[in-house]
Image 1 (tube, rainbow, N blue to C red):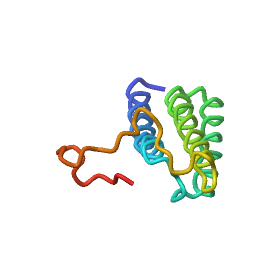
Image 2: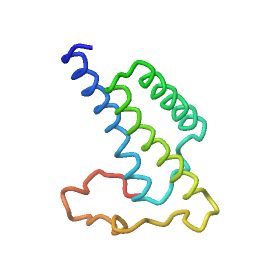
Image 3: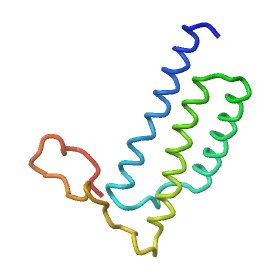
Image 4: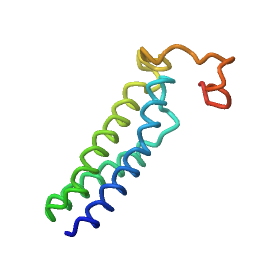
Length: 115
């Protein structure tokens, strides 16, 4: 592939992958993920695995790198959803070091979900 196509692929892969980081951080921060669908993230994870296989078949670095990182994030979300499932010993617990509730007086906490 040409260099600009690879660059475009890396930019696209970075943006779509980074979009899931806030979800992982939120789950860890609030200690729950019951509002996420097993079906959605399960099928999404299988799709990412298939995209990774496709990228490996094409030897397309942008597809391979983006989907390795995305697979790690998707598996993290599934693991955290299982870990914080209702009835588990971890349900509702906030994980350290992000466990401190936000300071309501801080302008950074205004309007953020602090569940």
